[in-house]
Amino acid sequence: MDKPKMFNTKMLNPDDMDLVDARLTDEQLIASFTPMELHWYNWYPGALEKLHAESSDDRVHRARLRQWFPKDDVYKEFLSWSRLWNGRHMRRMRYRMPVNEYIDLIQQTRFDQPDSTGTFLWSMEMGNMPFIYLGTSVIDQRASAYGIQPGAYYLWPNFDPNPYEPGLLDKSVLAINFNVPIEVSFHRNSGGRPREQASSGNEFVEWYDGNPTATAGFTFVQIGCLCTFDGDRRMLENLSHDGILNNTWDDTGFGVVVELSPDAKLGAVWVLYNFHQARPDEGCVDDACPGCAGCEDAPKSDGASEGRQHIRMYGNDGEKLRNVARLRGELFTAAKIAGSLEELRKPRKDFGFNMKRRYECQIVRAKLFEGQIYRQFVNIRSHR
Image (cartoon, rainbow, N blue to C red; front, side, top):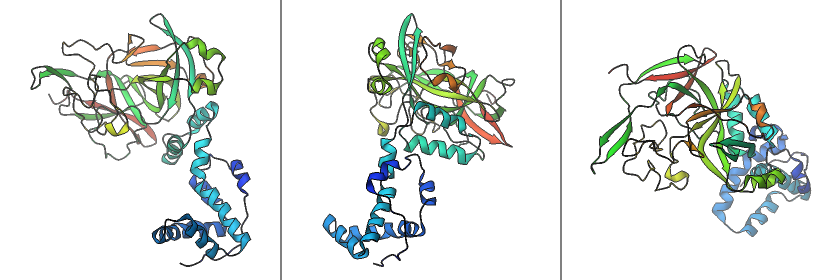
């Protein structure tokens, strides 16, 4: 195995590793490498692969490293670089982004620009995002505490007729059409019970910009899921943020989104009910939940939700189920909770849920065309 050529390099002591900014991306770290460190970056993966093929004994690994780097100063410089590069994931896991920094991240992202969106998604997937404590709200005469668990993929389109159409934005950016309720029909399955099914029909796709003149709705970016406190909310009043975070919070089934204008400006904050179950490989699915992946009567996925089953909103008698699209007993599928992200920087007392819809609406893809963001409108009636 060839030994790397030696260059002078700057050494970072192990004790200084915590001083390295955990928010640096891989690209930013690589850009900071000295010529020697860049050489190691290109050489080390192949060397490590051969080393593992030779032996799995750590003692052999250490002996080989000493053979490759006989000079103590160069050996220490290599170990320093290795901690910097190979320890990046651990540093990111230990660093929890503050709430204000998370909100700044969203506000600074241009969701009509792939590079900017990519940086946002990388941070969401790789970073340790903060739980956002929203405060308390009264629903159905009961006060409860709420928060947001950050995430970029919680809601899924219920129609996606042309998933490879040029210009489609990432599924972290979707759209909702309020005046297009999902059609529901009932037919008998093999057991004689009625089965709920969203109409698929012969879809005809149109595109509208974010202005509400053609059809009510908006484009949005996903920022997480809404959680509620499982316990006495009065406990939270004297707790620190870490204390709040370490208590038990339950997923409500609502995703949290921020409006996007046609020119990618951020607007109000909404909660939208998630009508798609997690896939079995994404965690436990409640077999008792109507419409879950294991339920015989569950409507089959059309591919738009990537294998996730659609949740039933109606029972066998055609009545709306009591445990779907409800918060403290109140039925709704879409509600505004803040005028802007700025209102999420500090917990609020008795913030409101401005409920917009009480039935499932059409969630579709968003598209960038000539510098403007358009939302899809799937007309499922046009060819009938």
